[in-house]
Length: 144
Picture 1 (cartoon, rainbow, N blue to C red):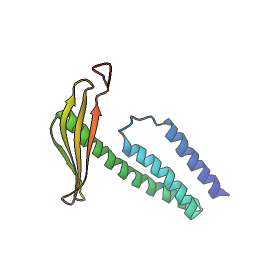
Picture 2: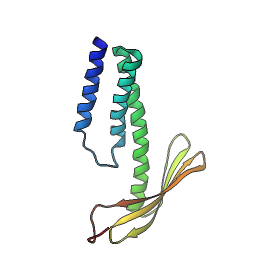
Picture 3: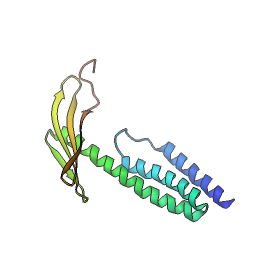
């Protein structure tokens, strides 16, 4: 009975904290990832361990994993944002042989949006290439 009560309390805490979080769409993924990972980890820990210790272990592991994934997303976004802002190529490296390269191209003067080619590298090999459009939020004309 105690373990079910603890699981319900943890779930309620995650829902309450998550509902209070109001963050911009493409930023603060580290915090969002930690929050989502904590909730999922606590639920999985409770389901597997069926006790408070399992819930807390799942909570801790989920928080760390969620934060790591969210941080990688933040760095990916930061590369594109910085390339558009400074109008020059930006490369971010990690300690595991990976890199994100962002190369700015044309700017749409009507919408004030920047196109950025983003390349993801792992161990010297190109894994993914995408083109993203980053807008500054203020329209320069009546249409997009």
